[in-house]
Image 1 (spheres, helix red, strand yellow):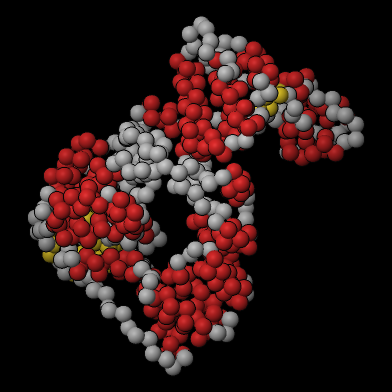
Image 2 (cartoon, rainbow, N blue to C red; image 1 turned 60 degrees about the vertical axis):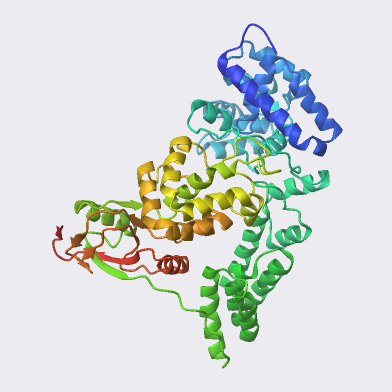
Length: 565
């Protein structure tokens, strides 16, 4: 695409942009109009310098570019590149003078203001506005001439192709650069065919309108009912739309309009695809505030059968209260198992609750016991290592684009269902007690790779192996199974600390004072903190699986602290 040989950086920029165009066309060419397809072909046959120039400028912040300040390493003749872009109708000089003026230095605006007799004081924005309001033409310097500026065309088409190529609503054009630099090592896998990003062009245009707009609750509900936000992987906007409706309903509750909030919750569940358990608690509270507690109780009764364990706790609390006020019964749920409590005094500040976990780790280190502070991160990393080989199996539609850290169906029940044999084999090996060896082997192969769920800074290989060994098959499966079916979000609420096996020690400022030898999971709470519902559910699961788990209540020390082994 040109001669003499280009600079390496320019060649790489051209290669990245060519791949973006090619992959974007592979995924979504049928969604382009004939005119858009012709524009893409014009991009692909640009002279090398113009191709690199266009590639680099489309990756920058959208704005007009001042030609005298344009930096294009590897492009020997920027003027010729710009002329080629203009000839291909991919760029022009049509930049309104008020836009050009906004990008000029303040000194240039001050000179024009003095010529017109306009006040030069104040901020640049104020000075610019005075010039815009002046009835006479503004004598700006030559640098403000339209011919000294460049405006790119068809940015939105490039953005559309980038979305097709990445299946992300907000694609990161720097991903190939990061991969080359070795900052992130991306997995290699065979691409699998799958459905296109949108069913037809009409759906594409509706999706793009949703993606670029700030929507009201009414607009979001209409879009959800029509299925306009649905799309594969990171293009799916339905979660964002539902969040917008929930937020609007919550605002109505706070502003004293519970009936309007009730209507939003009802429509969100009936036509917006929201799970009833997700909003039942708030919906019932809004019904109560609107003077209809019996309807709120009916919502809770309908939701409890299909709610997840965390949602059931909030549903039960409100259900019991409403049932009591209405003189009705509320069948109790099986009680959760409580974890044993331990009380500690440490030199901490009540104003810095985030330092409690670190202070606890330091206290344990002083007596020769190491603790990993990571909440769900070590466990999601363990999951990623144990199931990494199943991530990249050639399941149709699961790996349709490069630079994925996991398949599109990861974190859904479909992941297990579509890889039943491979996933079953991993689970069987865990049950057989082979997890520590699997973790050791997988860490040697995958460490440093962009692997969905893996947080390499959370724990090193030997620590992860020790966690798998200390939990044992039953405890490890108790943690992994929810992550397998519901993704990393299911790990929310796991205990703060994992105290690795070591010698039994005594903590003088703790009750009970003896720390056992084996692995111990500890949920750390400060003086004003209490257990959240997700934490209570996880503690119930862990205790039921025979895992040593405790709640550590930490208070500021009132006297010098000492530890004894």
